[in-house]
Image 1 (cartoon, rainbow, N blue to C red):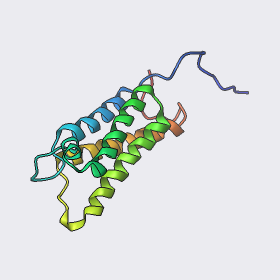
Image 2: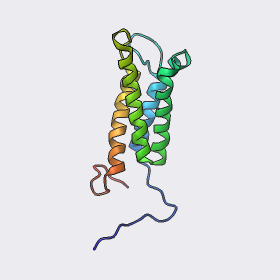
Image 3: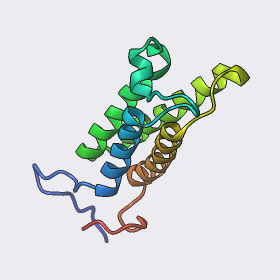
Image 4: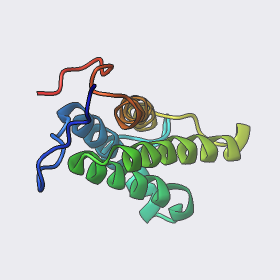
Length: 136
């Protein structure tokens, strides 16, 4: 007969530094790298410059992803990473052919958020025996 081993009281899960690094790279890309090809403005400067509806929710979700990755809250992390993906791609599709092409900032933020979502969703639903990365 097997029993479920619970952690000691007051002991939280260990931090996955890869998740923290992915969340930080997504946020830093949105804050500092050019969001559109051929235009020099990050998502942060575009949000300050008048496109707050398009870029502020993305920045808030990326900041929340960094917070949840630091706190090892994998379910909330997966949700916030999915929100970054959905909002960034949604604004790109809403702009249509008249909108600008995604630049380096959008590329790095979307790639990091996609990897972040996949890893956080697996950590939230997978058991310790099926995780592909070591948990030391």
